[in-house]
Length: 104
Image (cartoon, rainbow, N blue to C red):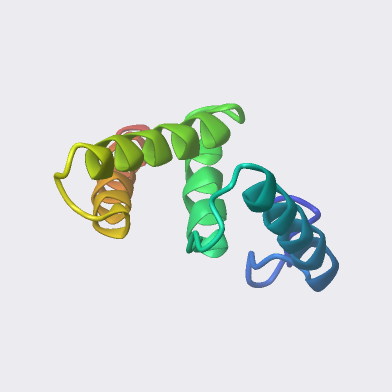
């Protein structure tokens, strides 16, 4: 849990969410992927899980790999991005759960 998140819910605090949304809009525009649907809460959640189950840098690496695999799968016609993203996220969640259970 970071100071950008509420201690009771883990949700992003409003000022953090606003700053993040502004950054996302700017980045999406400059990467020329307008129309991209992004579930910020899901991305933050899987990132937090990876940070906790592995080490802090695991969060951003995990989210990058999930996005990369989903984009690659969509580009090769396997399925739409949302379906691929959900599948890749489920794989990461299972691995992280397995890791937590092995330690705990």
